[in-house]
Image 1: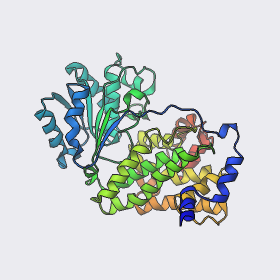
Image 2: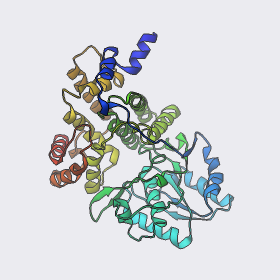
Image 3: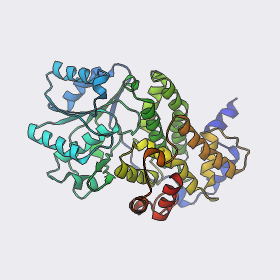
Image 4: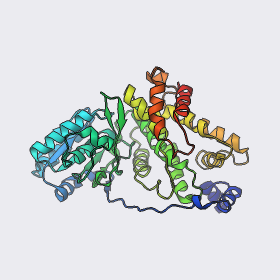
Length: 415
C-alpha cells in the first residue's frame, strides 16, 4: 500500500531517476525570493473579522462590487452593516464588469482622491478585486493616465491597502500581485504586477460561493486549472516539488469542480476549490522555474475583442494549446501529467499517455458544460490574425517557444 501511494504521488518510478541524472545546469531550481504577506481569514463567519482588519489599515473605505450578486445573497447588507456599526465612513463603486473596464478604474480613482479614501474593499470575484487593485495603485500614482499604469508606461509607487471579501473561486486575485483590465476603445486586455497590489487581508468564506451558477463555477475551475497548467508545463526538470504542488492543485480541481457544479452547496467542494484558486497563482508554484504565460496571452485577446468569460475562453483553448506544444523531447512532462493527475495507466507508450491526458482535459471541461469551440461562444475568425500577432509577441519564454503563426494555428484549431 505504501509503495502504491508513493507512485500515485510522484509518478513512474522508472521515470523520475533518469530525469534527475540527465539534468543540465539550466535545469536546477533557480534562485528566488518568496513572501506572501496576505493575511487570510478562511471559513464560515469570518466576515466578522472585517472591521478590525479595516481599522488596522485605514479609516475611509471605497466599497467596490459588481453587478449585484452580493446584494441578492445578502452579503452587501452584511458588509454595509459592519461598516456602519463600526463608524467606518465609506463610498461605493458598483457595476464593475466581468472583464473590468479602465473607465471603472478611473471612476474609482476620482472617488478616492476627492473623498480622501484610504482603504479599498472589493467584495466579489477576481474582476472586482483587479479593478480595486488598479484603483489602489492609481490613486497615489500622481498620474491621471490610468491606462498608462496598466500598460507600464506610468510607474506604480505607493499603493493603498486592499482588503478583499471573495465570492468566486477562479482568478486567485485575492492573494496575487496582478490586475488585468480591459480597454474597450483600444480592444486591449492586460495589466501590471506589483507587490504593493497584493491584498493585505482576504476574507474567504466558501458559503459565499454557494449561489455561483454552474457556468461560472465551471469557468472558475478551468481558470484555476489554467494557472497551474501554465506553471506545470515548464522546461526545468529540477523543480520537482513545484510540479507536485501544481499536480495537487490540478487534482483538487478535478475532484471538486464537477461536485460543485452538481451540488452548489457542497461546502467541502466549494472550500477546496476556493483554496486551490489562491494557491494556483499566489506565487508558490512559479518559484524556482521559468514560466511563460502563453495560453493566457491568447485568451486575453479573445476577451478584449469579444468580451467573453475568461475561464470559458481558456477551457476552449487549453486542449489545443497542449496538443500544439507536444513534442518527442517534451513528452516526459505530458506523461507526468497523464499519470499523476488523470490516473492514466503508466505502462502505455508515452505518446499515447500524452494524447489521453489531453483528451481527458478537454472531456473534463465538456462534462462540466463548458463550450468546446470558439464558435460556441460567438467568436468569428475575422480578427484571428491581428489577435495572433499581439498574443504571439511575448511568447519567447513559453514551454515551447511560439510566435504569431503558432497562435493563429491554435485559434484555427479551436474554431
